[in-house]
Length: 107
Image 1 (tube, rainbow, N blue to C red):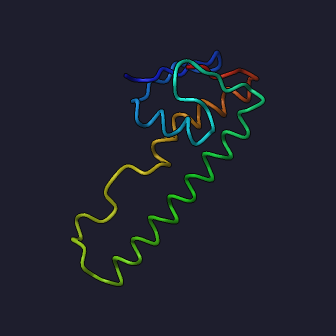
Image 2 (cartoon, rainbow, N blue to C red):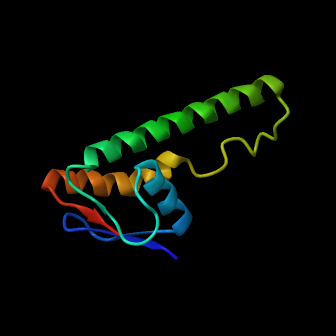
């Protein structure tokens, strides 16, 4: 079941279940039932998301370097998959815009 994030500062954001759950876990929110990220909590949520994105990018870079050193991978398979940065972009935008207007984000 998809999640529907709402804020009075932005349009609604609909996100698939697995992605939404992962993002909510990163920001330390319960994934069961409705919830809220208050305007006061948004800076912490943004920091947690950015830290998770940087950690994933570091893991990907390390894996790519290991693969390049071993030279066993298929050249067309390198870099496949949607990164966490790409998945978080709409949510991060919603959080930033909501913070700018002092609005909460609910789901």
